[in-house]
Amino acid sequence: MGDRHRVGVVGARGHTGAELVRLIRDHASLDLAFAGSRELDGQPVPGQDDVLFESIGPDDLAISDVVAVFLALPDGAGASYSAAVGPDTVIVDISADHRFDDAWQYGLPELFREKLRGATRIANPGCYATATQIALAPLVDAVSGVPAVFGVSGYSGAGSAPGPRNDQERLSDNLMPYKLVGHNHEREATRHLGLPVRFMPHVHPAFRGLLVTAHIPLGRAMSQDEIRARFEAHYGDEPLIEIRDEIPELKDGTGHPGVIVGGFETSGDGLNAVVVAAEDNLLKGAAVQAVQNLNLALALPEFEGLVG
Image (tube, rainbow, N blue to C red; front, side):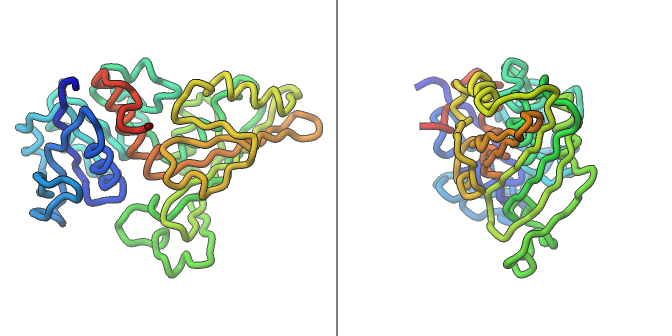
């Protein structure tokens, strides 16, 4: 076994933080140095016999001996933590704070893998933005017009702070549209694909799982087989991308470590394509992708701790 790396999680109480703690526990090369949570301070970390949750502030990070920190904090809450971390310590920020910041490397490995090797400041993509980009990237050069993406996710995507989008009573037997214009993940996918995208998100009553259906206008007629062949060429060797002929359903992505993409359809004239992508918003949409990014940054096997 090679050297082990001590890493910390700030914001370990949240849904993504809990997944990170689990992935670190099962990782052959990572050790959990601390799990930051003011609310759970002093309580044992599940599955980590020798680690307690602790209240971690920026000053604590500044003197920590970890090689990497995951920031699993709400948007806008991590600036003081990022500033406290030395330049040689890797930060993987799971919030949206640096996804539009050229000083940070955007962390979607299937599209930007080489830029992530050795990176010390990594902006983890949004959950919807990940699935949307995976569904569109193989067709970017063929698009004519603006793809429209319908998205639906479980309420864990709204975080743990109470609000309408994680109110289980309100969501029961319901589908809730929200932020139908200018969603951050629309802007994010547009920026990193270099292609305008329109995105319509919805929340449904399940805890986790995410699905996007992308309607893609094409500049020339393409067959269903040609569309699928592009995805095979793009992702055929990617362990975390599964290509199916069948239409993925939301439940297919739940608990899955990667993205399932399929349901390739074309209109009668071949000038419009539809692609469906499913993922777990807490896994490839957050924690799995964060660990994948850290593996690349630390020159570890990219999929260590993520696939069997």
